[in-house]
Length: 53
Image (tube, rainbow, N blue to C red; front, side):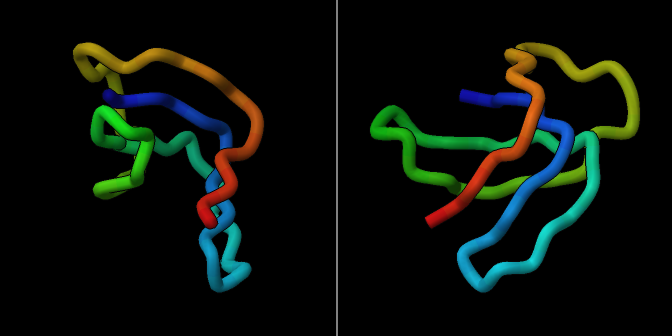
């Protein structure tokens, strides 16, 4: 699943201002993330901050 966020806070405390896309598996575990640079298919916008544990 791909979700869109305004920013991401990683487990080490670093915060990146986005927008960003977070890719997760079916259990909700983050596989990757990247900056959103334009339209991208299949991204569900959530907004706010994604906090990774």
